[in-house]
Image (tube, rainbow, N blue to C red; front, side, top):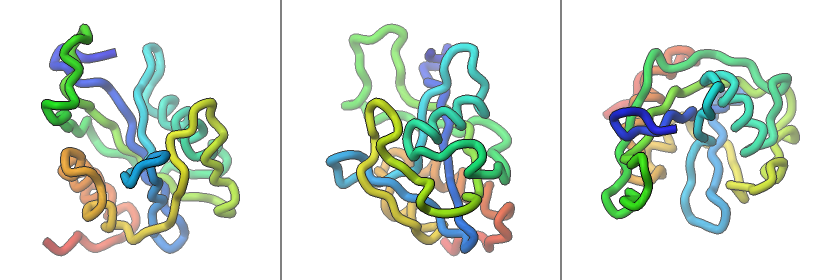
Length: 162
């Protein structure tokens, strides 16, 4: 499902613990870390997609989390030119994402990276709220910055020093 501008609708998921550290996951067999995220299917709203992706990617169910908030609108990023699949129709040039901030309720042991049919991550860890800005792939940095800055006040965090 690609919109008329070439962006695929997607959800981004930030899971925080009681210390306001966030769950940071490593793509399977890669040295690439990111927040869980995934596409929104036809006839699925962003909240439904978020819960589905949460379960598929990190094994958390609705009873393991509470929704703290979400971004007001869509945040977009473009794929690098070398990653755009020119032979696909409709052409996808990037993603538009609705971001959710969740609080983990209960134990870390609820996180399970191989619950889905095709695991996307092979490791995870808790990191400082702002650390993903230093580690995420370059073309996602601005969308991560926008999401983290918009959602930080919901955790009573101070703005990131520039």
